[in-house]
Image (cartoon, rainbow, N blue to C red; front, side):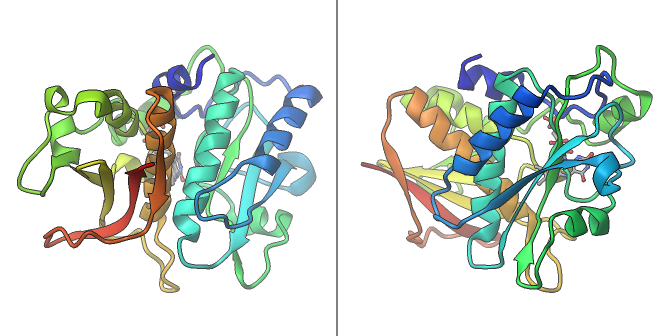
Length: 269
Ligand SMILES: Cc1cc2nc3c(=O)[nH]c(=O)nc-3n(C[C@H](O)[C@H](O)[C@H](O)COP(=O)(O)O)c2cc1C
């Protein structure tokens, strides 16, 4: 499977068929994860975990015992770096026809953090099951998808803007960036909030976060910035597929906004 197809085809898989993951499949995902990059160059440590061996559980996942998790030091941009890298692992798994689900909340977090040997200055933002998807979703999975409208995404014009936030960008006006922005639109996010907003200005794509209540913890960790990291990965993959070379810079252009927070910009090379 080609990576843009993986972006279009991926969905969260919470019901697996019960077949243990083949050792060669575990090996492939582990090897990919060890080598995955992120634009902030923050080191991330990955582990493949086993629910039985490590006493792990999640009330939303059935039919697989294999998990992948990553941890990194708390640092500026750790959220975006993790979101970017973990999504690349998710898409790699998708290309192998494996199912995944980003999970930040609905798991026994203490058990996962123990299995990851998490140090005081580290954070384990999310985990994912790895397995072969079942033919039919569990009733709980079907209901969860309905609850967050998991099959729908905001319209293009609500997410993307032309030069300033008072000028929504229609797909027809996006030119060669249309498939790139479409790839961002399809990205997964916590509770499907899709907190990314992008202003296109000259050869630049400025990423902003629209914060919802309840996603940041007292230590300042903001789960929605992990979502933005996912959007950055989808943008970069989409741009590469369209033959557009861009690199990430953190350089606030000072575009006027009342409620959005600047994160970073992709700039044409
Ligand atoms: C950062 C992040 C955290 C998430 N946490 C959970 C979670 O704790 N439990 C869960 O069932 N799904 C979780 N999800 C999955 C989202 O609900 C899902 O991606 C979204 O509803 C869109 O559905 P899709 O992935 O099938 O496209 C999370 C997704 C992201 C990106």
